[in-house]
Length: 131
Length: 131
Length: 131
Image (tube, rainbow over all chains, first blue to last red; front, side, top):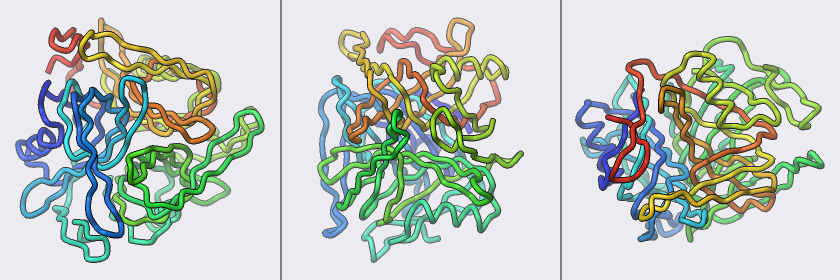
């Protein structure tokens, strides 16, 4: 396990994927706190199997962010959900599609063992672990 | 530590309790992300010592879910809090009583050492660890 | 890693800092769930580099709380973000400045390795890890 400071202006999801690539991490769980300059959240429509997106263009605190790293189509894939709060403390939550970092701290636990691979699941329309 | 995909239509709290039973896990910490078809949240009234309940019958993203497994009355007991968000990103949070899984991923850290047991605490009216 | 029950009426941030001091923990990641009697949240203004504060004087569920312990000015420094929910399930989130505990459970992972030190960062105005 290690903790990492994310660079100012980095995109959070790409930063974690690059970290996994750089350290040859195939499977991990992580959490992050900090602040974003802007973010995009997604909400999955369980009937139509499509993501609705919500672009937040104002500064946000990362009140919570939890996720994991696994493999999809041969490369590290980052899946994270987050609760963001604006300057009044009002919160929005969902699937974190992207976040432009003001400042962020990530705690990442590498998982040893077999590589975990995502495959398309017909019931949900999502890419799920084949386990 | 391991990560697990929860079955579609499973009840999240029971799924984790069953996992603990199956692998003889007496103490653990976990986090989960995913989506629920429906959920029940609880809010503890600190004066009357009663839970108020809120049934959410629409699909919810599990924006955050953190909890632990310990023992209560001789069996694994799952305690979790969650922040859920609806299709508009609006959030509600509290004690997670139950959640019907659309898709979910759990990261669970087993704790080795003495079994942690919950006992009734008179000051709060809750079942707390006897430590 | 260990899990700890926080004492009734303790202040959550000080409790974790004291725990780190007592067990000579210089670096750690943690999560907490529970309920607070009152709390103070902060939201960082990314332009003026000042915290705005929000005092919550009613009971709150700790729907989520994630943080870390590192060093600042030679002593253990606790940094945590949280999502709190009131008796109606309405949530507020941000930087957790303080929280008076009704009941709380903390899971803490000690990080071994070099001591992580915070230093003032000119770009953000925050005390960030020097890594």
